[in-house]
Length: 116
Length: 415
Figure (tube, rainbow over the protein chains, first blue to last red):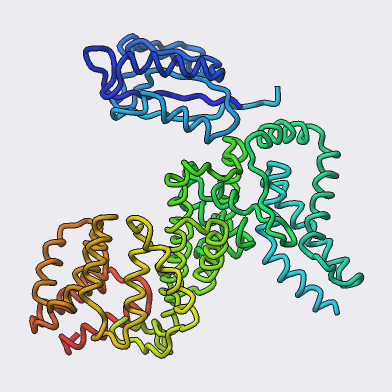
């Protein structure tokens, strides 16, 4: 079963790591996900100032705006998709993720299965 | 004959429902399917038993029938079967062998306790699911127990089951190293059920004994399944000792009777006798948990011949321990009440006044009632009357309000 771990990291310090988790921590976590054979995909997202929002109205008109600039606390900083047997295992991997520490949080969501 | 058989079905089903469901869930990995075939098996029993007689092993009969119905259902619905087969293959890998205690149906309920009280489920759904899956209550019965409309409860249960199914919350017993993190959630769920039954938060009945009794019944089961878990033992003792006072807690006219003036002859001695031997195991072998300490406090009350001769110094000491384990203004309030008995109203009032800014207590009527009682004992009647009025403005059940009104009239006859 596939789960997406949405990583809402805490404030990033000068070294590029969030409070309480270093770049080294991230590299070790990434390696352990790969080594466990559960990695499906995963990316870390570029800084929020680079984000752009697109909306298309009912008449087909496209609006493009800079942002969004949410509260610093709840910024999606990256994600993993992992394939594990059940929610308990997914929660264990979420708890090991450096992004869950230092004021950050990891939201675990099952990937919808349309019977494919 | 028909009535007798129906009665037999009902008592067997109620007793065996949790066991039946746990075995079916483990076999098929799906709560909905398990519930469906379990109730179909009951219907079959209602048809066959009055004619053929109640089988020697009614639980095993129900299980065999339910299994057969599940297999039929899966044969009819291949897509569903394929999905469950994947699930099952994965569950089988991790699942421990079932415990066989020689009973009619093997007891695999422990995994169901942990699934129903899973931290990923909303707290208000955990108790409801536990009542449905383990106590065998129907959704309307669960709704009545929680004083919510049936549709609300049905929705709550459907949503929780959807999450179990779609987020794949597993049916498994946590590993020993996970127990310290997971068991408190199960105990909390059972204790909430108990409290929900013990003091209704609104409405005319101060107690709904069935919910408290269901909680005790389930905690006894959990204690049997996890005999070495000391906090389970502590919780069972606490529930039994609290429940032992139920008859003395309400006057015939429905009024609340405080511990201080309860008729101790009406306390349920068999429950107390069941609880007291549990305490040494709950308290020994390492620092005790909060349920065990609360049970120890309740045991001192149970053993005291009168309120005045209660071992108050020991009770204050136990509250000190409890405050270090689970610091909370509510426990500080109870400690102050015990301290009033040990040292008199004045130092206790100082403690209560120091708690005046706690958010949890400002809207908690027992805080204002306790303060009012102390002011009353100190002869500060206008202040006592004001505090009783504050309590009255917050009190929920009818008996509690009647009690407070009577206390208020004692300090302010004009009220």
